[in-house]
Image (cartoon, rainbow, N blue to C red):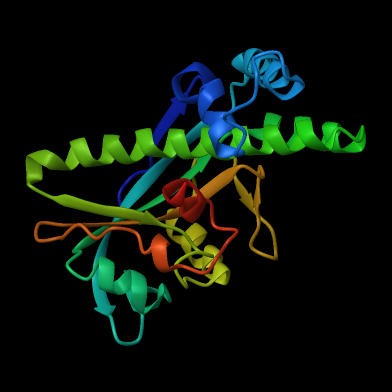
Length: 233
């Protein structure tokens, strides 16, 4: 049985990275305070205070079947091909939370404008801030889920997304079908890319006997994965 979408909205101040965190993320932690990149980060963080589009949430659903060998999980009548790796991590799950979260359209609009102006460094930094913002927001949503399940003595897994950990990006369509109507404003293109650009989707396993498994980022070869980048850094 699928439950109602649990919605969360955040101000930018609640989920914004610090200047120091942004500098570490872009491998520039040793820059002086008056460096143009540091000045830009300070100014853009102030400007982003007015971003009101940061939101997300999740819907809970029962796991009706899981085939670790085939790398599939069944939710109601929907089968997701999440891969053997993720199945192995969440094989004790009896439920799953399917989530969506976005940092809002402001990041797309502002990054596009900077690129069009030829401000490549600034666009790169703003893109990094967007990535960190949506992940911070999703951290808050995941913690809300964890606390909500404590009374039922249920544990949660890490979160996993299509396109990572060998979960095919094309499964985005099935995931969006499972979540169905929601107030996030996130849409999916025919090529399975989300709009706004700084958005995440995925699944969290839930179960009484669920064991915690660390991400396999240390041995992952996907250099473009944001989770691998954050954890390895």
